[in-house]
Amino acid sequence: MEPIALDRLTDLDAVLTEDEILARNTVRQFVADKYLPIVSDHFEHHTFPEALIPDIAALGVLGASIHGYGCAGVNAVTYGLLLQELEYGDSGLRSFVSVQGSLSMYAIYRFGSEAQKQHWLPRMARGEAIGCFGLTEPDSGSDPGSMRTMARQDGDSYVLNGAKMWITNAPISQVAVIWAKLEADEPSAVRGFLVERGTPGFTTTTIGKKMSLRASHTGEIVLSDCRIPRENLLPTSRGLGSPLACLNQARFGIAWGALGAAKACFDSALDYSRQRIQFGVPIASKQLIQEQLVDMALEISKGQLMNYHFARLKDQDRLTPYQVSMAKKNSVAQALHIARMARSIHGASGISLEFPVIRHMLNLESVYTYEGTDEVHTLVLGRALTGFDAF
Image (cartoon, rainbow, N blue to C red; front, side):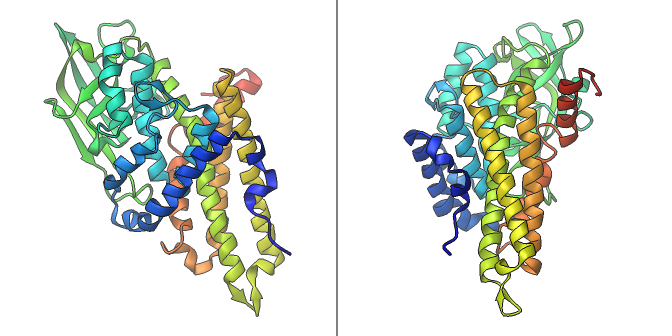
């Protein structure tokens, strides 16, 4: 019989608008034509395809959910679909877009002054200025309240001291959104600051020897008596709730993106199993292989339906942080499981960059940890269900 495509199992297109489908298909074509042919080489050589940044920006995906300031202003479903297609290519590609839009640009959009928005957002939407988001520190990950980076007001300036770690885009960023405790506040409240490349005391170094997210720039930020003008403070940022609001935006996108990686692994496993002949027949004809493929297809389909529902809620301003945690935890955990199953179906070939599965599998180990570890999202949901805080 004629096989049924994965997307036909749920027929999600039946409830998407023409604009949502067009936007998704446009990014899908870009990934297929311009990104997939080169990503394995970039992964192998630990580089990011910076030459594609103008093309990525031309798709309208940088700050796509922001309204005005040269941004696309798409709805939540469209944004999720775009990130799903980007991560079908690679988690590094989706991370670049997420950090630029959902973290850096969103922080400026949500907490910045009108002058800051006008200065940065149009340039960032065009890919002319790259941003990064400095929250995580060497000794402060899941507990951002323990950060040690401090900001001291000195006349018309702020002086920042501290370090940030595992910061996507840091090595190529023109502006960093730095979260620091303001010494004058009681208790020291977390505030956001814009630090531009070239500011004395601001340095970034590339983190090497990664075995995950290799086709992505990851760096450390060091702030040593880094003096910035007072107008670089994000004026409406107040406390940890401000960076966490940005993370909530990014986690929503990650929930969609991770399923893109899962789909890439499924597609590769399905194609390989149809062509791989053992004992005189394609291994796709074997019951154990079909069971694995069915399990993959079910989890991807269930995850997409959950994400679609939550995206519609988000467009109605009804999406809760608990639901974002549910979506992120589910999508990433299932995507990692699917990547491992797909690697097994490929046999020895599964560890080769000739196929996408080992690349996605290694990337997803990072996605499982960043933007809230799987354990942290478990505790968030546990608190929601029981009313007890287990942190």
